[in-house]
Amino acid sequence: MHMRKTNFYLLFLLLFMAFMQGCEKTDDGTYTAPITLYEKIGGSWSMTTLTQIDEVAKVNALKPDEIAMTSHFNFRSFVISLNVDSSFLPTTYEVAGSAPELFAPSGYWELDDPFVHADGTSTNIFLYADEAKTQLTDKLIVLAIPGKTNVLEFSLTRSDKGSPYVTYEYRLKPAN
Image (cartoon, rainbow, N blue to C red; front, side):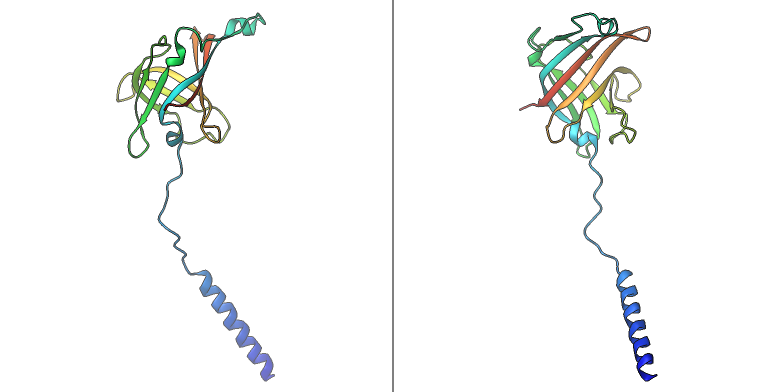
């Protein structure tokens, strides 16, 4: 009987110590905010390829429905800077080079969401004429986010009365 009582106390002591150990708060450093898309997309990007897609030809199965524009009209000189502040929040953007302007060459920008969409839909880059971000000038649809490949891809679609007629797909790499 004495042995059972000792075993009981030992078991109780072990359980109590395990419980107290579990209550200990582990502090492994300070809070770190998650990486946002602004940290991945912010910066200067230079053109690697530009493809023009004829949406009307594509719908009607006409060829050619795509044209590589990279070597035409000096598009290789295209560089876009998506500027962020020290907290990685979007500020201004600016396009440099002598390529034709397919969207406003400067202004303000922001993403529709600072994180990848959980439903798998594309992220949008909104371009604005004003700092208050009330005058939307264009919407760029992100096709590829920099990661392992360090490539940014986005598209710009032009529509007439809600019907798209041309899309430009940009493939960019970090500018040197």
